Every structure is written in C-alpha cells, then in structure tokens.
Length: 409
Image (cartoon, rainbow, N blue to C red):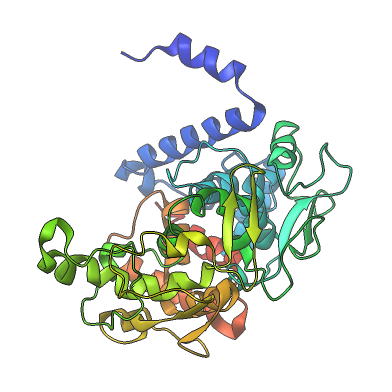
C-alpha cells in the first residue's frame, strides 16, 4: 500500500529542486498513462499537442499565453517554433536537463545526485547551442557568475554547484551560468591542449578516476556517448599488444577464458584508456590531478601478473576498433591514434554512433519510451543527419525534433 502521508511529508521537506524533479516525474507518468488511451489520441487538437509538447520538454504546464503561441505555431506547420518556445521555460534547463544529464556523471547512473560541473557544462552547451561534438574535447566549463553564490568554483569541492542548486539559481539565464575555460580556472593544472570537455571536469574525475586503472573513464564515456557497454564492443580479432601487465592471461588457470572473453574487451579498451595516463583523482585533496609527462602509478600496478604485457610510458592511445565489427560505429576522425583525452574525445564524437546515441537518448527523454517501429528509427536517423549537418551539432534542435515526432502520442 502507498503511504501518501509519508510522500507528502517527504515532498514538503525536500529542497525546491528536489520537489521540481518529483513533479517532473509525475507529469511524465501522467503523460505516459494518457498515451495509453487511444480515445484520448483521437480527440487531440493543436492545443492538446502544444500542451503535451510543453509538458514533455519543460516538465511543467505552459502559461495561457505560451500555450496560445505554441498552438498557433503548430497549426501553421511550425512545430519547431513551438518546441523552441517550450524550451525557453527555465524548467527545461533547471530540472529536465539536470535530470537527464546527472546519471552520466556517476557510476550508479542515478538522477539523485547534486548539480556538478559536468552537468552544468552540458546544460550550458545546450542552452548556448555550443556544437555538442565538442563535449569531450573543448576547453570549456560552465560555472556560476563570480560572487553569485558562496563559494565560487573550487578545484577541491562541489560546494559551488550545490549552492547554485540549493538557492534555486536560474541556469537558463546566461548572466547566472557562464562559460569559462577549464585551463583558466584558479588552481587548474590543465593547459588548453589538455582540457577535454566533460572528461576533465571535477565530477567526471571524482566518479571515474579514483583507484582502479582509469579504464572506468573509457567505459562510461562509451556508455554515455556511444550508447555501448564493453560487452557490445567485445572483439577478439583485434591486436592485443596494448593489453597491460595487470591482466591475467589465464584467469582461474584457464587461458581460453582470457582469449575468448577478456581479450575482446581489453584489446580495444586498453589501447584507448592510455589517453588518461596523466590523470588521477586525489582522495586527500578531493580534486583531479594532471601530471604531464608522468604516467600515474595505477597504470603500472600488478606488473608481475603478466610481465610481458604492455607497459604504459606516455598518454598515447590507438583505436583498434576502427576495423572489425566495431567499424560499424563509423569512425570518421582525423587519425586512429593520438595523445591525451582531448584527441580521443574528438575521435569518439566524430562517429556516427555518437550522433545516433545522443538522438536516441533525447528521444527516450521526450517521448517517454524507446523507439518501437521503423517510423521511429527513420526519425532518429533523420535527426542524427540534421544534428551533424554543417557541423552544427545542436542538441536543442534534437529535442525539438523529438518533441515534434511524439506530439501526437
């Protein structure tokens, strides 16, 4: 039995941002339930479509004025203009985008985490139409304006972003959430050529660089930006010369397990994860550290497991997955090898898989379901084409196209 009293008490005691997230989720559920009723769809008119589009994009009902304007746009065949109006609502940035991006920033992939520099940077890039194919390579970060909250951005704390969220600062306002360079932040250890978009944000470092061997950063980059986990990339036909010393070649005494399973992931992953060799998370000072020219010790641990394995000497990477089954990701970067996370990020974001992945994630966010038929798949491919056209990579445009595609549901 649902304890309604408990839900009310919890909601009242929650922060404004948390309450907004709950409201958005409830609206999503209501829309999904209405979408199950064929008779409701049969009676939809342009006003209903406008209202549904606004609810899905902004997570809150439109004002009467905005509803009327959106209805007119849809009636005139300009659903994209109606979607743009809906995305002008601050809730699109402060709640919907925040909820959408937050799972990318932690290993648990939970939405229930505070605002951080990774999430804020994606929100700012969407708001300002920064080409999204630079999300893994640009020297970019979004912070609150100086003096807007206390403290200002800190390398050793997320308190700045927690304050922005707790005080309900409107992230849709460019005067509040401002674009900066990571290399220009006080205390930064990154040069412009080292900064790699969200990869080198404090939140990403805290989530994916602690302990371990930095392979987690590659895994979650693949999950979040290629929509593929390691099992889907497994290919035992690639060269294994980059597999590190810490990987046993006979797990449980059985070399066949390595050759038929472990090898298929590590041959590609270890070749790519070398890009992060100069990066780590400092648990004591709670910050990301960058040691150019100095390979982090974690890359050299357990060297006796297989002494003949690869020894990391720099932050070079090589992409063996450009050939074989994973060539279907359609790698279109300048080269299959490079140094550091910036060039690797550009390699990932140049793929067709990157474009389709972003569209699929937006589609599920806006339509409250995955693609179900050929019409949906065609719409996703078209949106990916438009996303790439002219190098614009506008994620706001993808949200608009998804909203238009699903406005009759």
